[in-house]
Amino acid sequence: APPLPERQRIALASRLPLEPPDPAADPPVPPGRSSRARRPARSSRPERFTKMTTAHALNASAFAGAKVTPARGARSSAVGRKSVVTRAMAVKTKTLSIPKTFEELKRRGQCAFIPFICAGDGGIDTTEKAVRILDEVGSDVIELGVPYSDPLADGPTIQAAATRALASGTTLDQVIDLVARVTPDISAPVVLFTYYNPIYQRGFEPFVKKIAAAGAKGLLVPDIPLEETGELSAVCKANGLDLVLLSTPTTPTERMAKIAEKSNGFIYLVSVTGVTGVRSGVESRVEGLVKSLKSVTDKPVAVGFGISKKEQAAEVVKWGADGVIVGSALVKALGEAASPEAGLEALEALAVELREGSNREGAKPKGSGGGFFARLMGKA
Image (cartoon, rainbow, N blue to C red; front, side, top):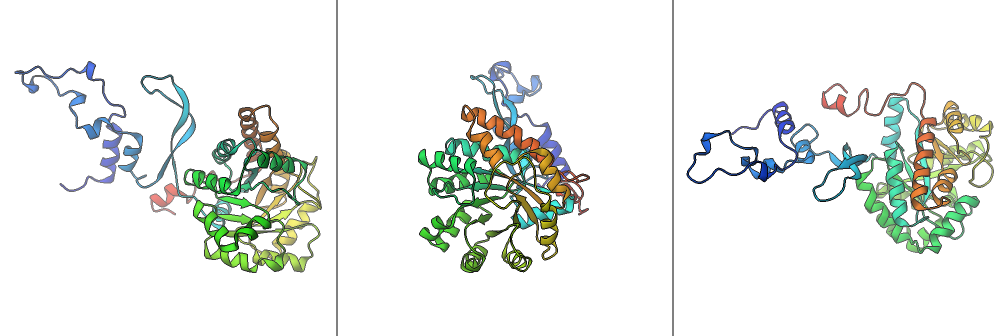
């Protein structure tokens, strides 16, 4: 028989039962009695229909081929156990590269929210839950820090988090395995933040190949000078990884242009002269730094260091930044709570607030005006 039209397949899928019927409520026909004597019971439908699930229904629809992942907040009513908070079925598309992510944000007139957390602080399992939470609250890119014994660019909060993570036995391989577990289920591309020594010890190519295979989309190395990025940048490009470089308030304009040229994905603009950490306000000179960078490049500029509040994020957005990076405040919320569970709750609450602060006024919602549905209908 010829295949049914798409609309009919979707309609059919929507009418099929999502739960198997109760055999006790629909006894079989006794021997000797015609099954035509009464209307066929739901349980008489083929087995493939009675075990229909949301995932199967999606496969019969226009969403066929899309990734299906559970979303937080729904409840399961599995037989024989109590209802528990689980993830409702939600459709997610394939994770975009960092450049494509910023292209999509620009099309919508939106600013990126880029949170940072230190892997292993509170345990690898806690980090995995934290990454998933950050993705669910609307993070556009997620920075995942590899704990390191001498984090020269980081202030007391992230130094303490790295120390706790290392003390608990967190290793680089565990962090890479974590990336491999979460990236198939999240939409935000992951940038691995690590210092140069672990990369040097393993070798550029083995290190980059491994994190790229795990699903990382970018790499940020705060202590590698511009003049020494050539080989690492080439290896990253060959493996589909974006090497993100940093510019600081003391960077001369000429050097700023060279950094912008070599940086991929986006340019990380450090907002202060110093290390990471929570500050009471964002320095007003950041507005001029953003303008200076944008005068020498058309690549996205994301501002980090010192942003911890919704109002600070909104100010950076107003100054024309393409992304807002928040680290220490989120690391503190997660790592300094009374328990991992309390830390995850605090992390989520702050991330929601910062996501709101990073929204650009007038930005189109995700998926609107030329997004997935517009492409589906041929209007993009």
